[in-house]
Each structure stands twice: as C-alpha cells, then as structure tokens.
Amino acid sequence: MTRRQQGFTLLELLMVLGITTILLTLGVPAWQNLVERMQVGNWQRQLHGALNYTRAHAIHSGIPTTMCARGNGGGCAADGGNWHRGWLVFEDGAGHRDCQPNDAGSRCQHSGARILRVNRGPEELRIVNNHNIARRVHYNPMGLSYGYTGRFTVCARHKDVADKGLVIANTGRIRGTHADELLDCPRKDA
Picture 1 (cartoon, rainbow, N blue to C red):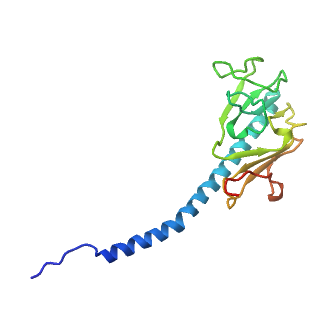
Picture 2: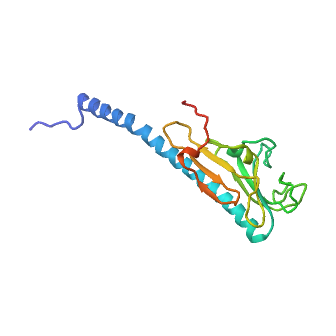
Picture 3: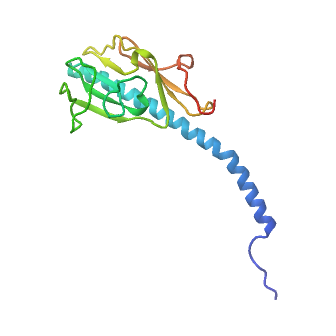
C-alpha cells in the first residue's frame, strides 16, 4: 500500500489566494462605505438628540438654554464652525450665551450657569453650518430659537457616501434635511 500525502498543491494554493484577493478587493471598499454611512448617520442623530435635549430643557426648566460649539479649551468656541470638536449644553439664565467650564467642569466660570452636557464631536468627520448657528443655538423657555435658525450638515469623507443634515426653524423645531438643503462639504477625494 502506498501512502497519499495530504495537503494542497502549489496550483491550488495560488488559485485560492487569487480568489481571496479578488473578493477582498471588491469587498473592502464596500465595507468602508458602509462604516462611513453609519458614522455619518450616527453623528447626525447625536447632534439632533443634543438639540432636542437643549430645547426640552429650556421648556421644562423655564430657563433659557444654549448649546455651543466647543473650542480648543473645552468651552464655547470663539470662532465659528467648530461643531466637529463637539458641543456644550448649559443653562443660560443670565443670557451670556458663552461658557468656559470651571475647574470642576460642572459650571460656567463667569456666570456660574450649570453645564448640562458635554459632547466630544466626530473629529474624523466635518460638521458644517450656516452663519446663524456658527457658534451656538439658543432656546428661550418657550422652546423658540429666534435668531438661531439654520442648517447643519454632517459631511462624509468620501463623495460616494451621502451627507446628512438638520434644519432648525424659528419655532425651534429640528428636522432632517432634504438633499437640496444640504450645505457644501469639503472632501478629501473631491
């Protein structure tokens, strides 16, 4: 009796490697697009949730409430368009519309206003906005956002992944955007 060797021939191994390479070449970009679509949708929902929370707090507490874009120091940004760094939600009864956290991080330094939420932003993505909401969105105790109407767009990194956005009306209502309402996004691959 002769013994047969078990295993793969070189030709079989090369064919399996070739097929695997083809499948990975086709599958990895699709997987990356899926992950990016999920990230864009997730950050749009987080931004929407934070805006709804800010408005609801103003209504239920009877205290004007502000949500501002975070700057490098962790407080409200001095310049506009930094929403990708995150946001800060705070009670704004004094009407300062600005907050730099104290050492404990629970109150604003100058006004003593209570900080309600701090959110790190999607630094891997960009959030663009129009000028009315470049630095902040402010809600009065009626839930209205007079003067703070505008649009946000959460930008995907690649042009073949859809951007998602939000619109804030004078009434304070927040809704998703239609495709023609999205703001222009900077792209790495454009």
